[in-house]
Amino acid sequence: MFSLKILIVEDDPVSALLLQRALEKNRHEILGIADSGEKALDILAANHADMVMMDINLAGELDGIKTTEIINEIYDIPVVYLSASSDAETLNKVVGTNPSAYVIKPFNIRELNMVIELAIYKDRKEKELYKLNNELEEKVKQRTEELYNANRELTKALEKEREINELKSRIVLNVSHGFKTPLTSILSSAQLLQIYAEKEHPFKAKITKHTFKIENAVRALNSLLTSVLFFGKSDADKIEFKPKKMFLGAFVKEVLDTVNAGKDNDVKIKSELVNLPKVITSDRELMYQVFENLLSNAVKYSKDGQEVVFKMEFADNKVIGTVADLGIGIPLAEQNQLFERFFRAKNVGVVEGSGLGLSIVKKCVDVLKGRISFDSSSGKGTTFRVEIPVT
Image 1 (tube, helix red, strand yellow):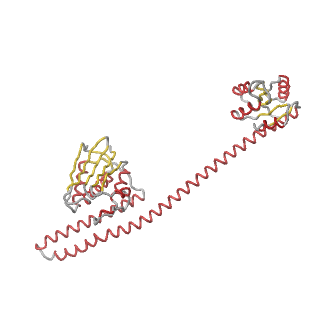
Image 2 (spheres, rainbow, N blue to C red; image 1 turned 120 degrees about the vertical axis):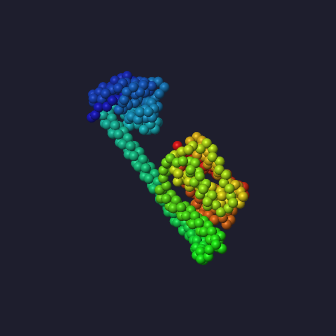
Image 3 (tube, helix red, strand yellow; image 1 turned 180 degrees about the horizontal axis):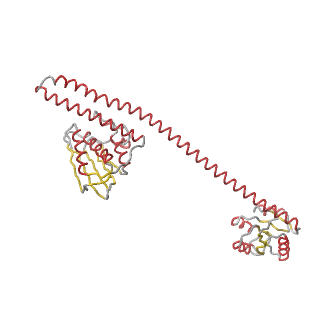
């Protein structure tokens, strides 16, 4: 028989003394004797007990049943009821508190010892079962979460595969179409050059004209290839932010020179540079993609004689670029698709393009940890604003 720390709750001093002697004879430690539920709770608040021997009828406002309910809620220790009553009404009240045992007075020592052992055994087994149930519930919860995550990842993978397959098909179609026109132009112009080269001065203007066509066609082809390669890297997660020191004035000049050299209409670019530092640290290639694509689009979708305003300023450790045009604008119903790959608004007409430029801009801005916004109305032009943090 193992030794337990036991609290006796009994309002009859004689019964309490007899119970104490019986328990101590079996080497149990008595924490105290309380004649009311209130005193019992005070003793438990100051001492650890392995078991409580509880009389049902007690002095004070709390009877044994109410006191047991409080003990079950706070301490979770086994309670053995002591009572001279065994009527159905009393037993029904007792069962509701899930007692560890019930002893009828008067009791003998042997019966008492057996009840105590069974009560402790029952309590330990219930706690072991509770622990096992909790562990099982946790494992089920964890496994359910793992299955959910696995299913979600599988769904994402299948969706990604579908998107990749669709993207591949669209790339093949668009690239094939994009190659066809400039290559045909290159071929026919080269054939004409061969003829004109046999003559001298009379065909100089024609030679110049077709040389210019070759240059533009090659530039368009190179731009398309650059876009395709960019998204190849993007899909493979190989686009990295590589900040380096760069001269901002030279950067702006390079972007403007490139866009001006490639335009085939009479659109002027007005640049406004405000408070720009001489040197910044950022990823030059990504910034170039952003502003070259925005300016090229603004020029391409403007009419002869119109003006594109390119403003770049520096504030709060950010390069803030604004590109505004008075061109064809973007229909309101299509603006939510603007940064999707291969998207081209319905009002672009015969103006050539791959629909990749703004997708590249958005991806680059994201890698640069910047922000891009726009305001546009069909037929009234578009304004893009880009904010890029730099050091």
